[in-house]
Length: 311
Image 1 (cartoon, one colour):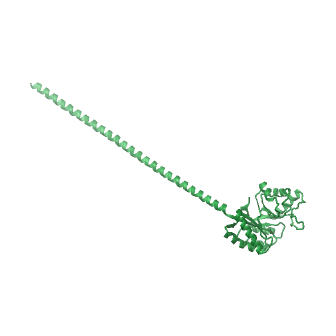
Image 2 (cartoon, rainbow, N blue to C red):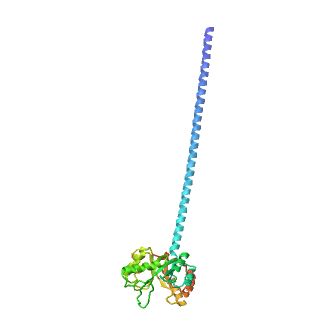
Image 3 (cartoon, helix red, strand yellow):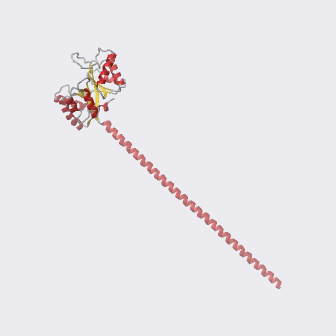
């Protein structure tokens, strides 16, 4: 009986030890699983947190990019609108250019004319006492210089002056004459005709003269001493920058006459957007031009350099 008791007790003890081992094993595995789960959960949380932060950074950068893009487009639009408005103002501005012909006779008048408070263009006759002086002074003042090219008029009793081109000349003689006139005056940017009602109606002669003008990269202003002049139209056909006179200011040197011509100039400019006036170095003309500057400004008309009105 004693032997059976000890066998029974020993079995119970082994069972208890086994249960304890099983319990310890279960507990250890549970803790490890919990730790792994906790680690996985924590890692997942960290990854999700990083992902959320990355998405927030990307979203923020996207917002900043879109803002910068919109801001840039707005600036570009503002600049474009400003450009359009400036162009509208520029295109809508009425402009007048003034040419003073027959320069080279007097030094004092040249000084007066080139000290006016608005731009003028001086057209200088060749071989006069002060032709080169006028051209040099104009260069220093930033004023455009034209060769006032003498040409034969219809009235044979009127002498066009030294260096004139006549209809009786052959082609080479015309070219040589033009070259001599051109070489006499420095700083020439363009040419307009002095008299020349007979020459400017002659397409063949004008083509010779204009070919010389084109070769020297000059422009041509048709003084329109004849309503039948072909100079302006032929210049356009030949690809030469050009324009034509609108009004002669002082065919009469009377103040009232000149004032009326300035009125005609103003009305033409307002109607067509631009006009070109030709005057001469007379005292009354200079006085009226000073008055005209104020009148034209009050009408929104600007006196501009001749080059702005070339076609």
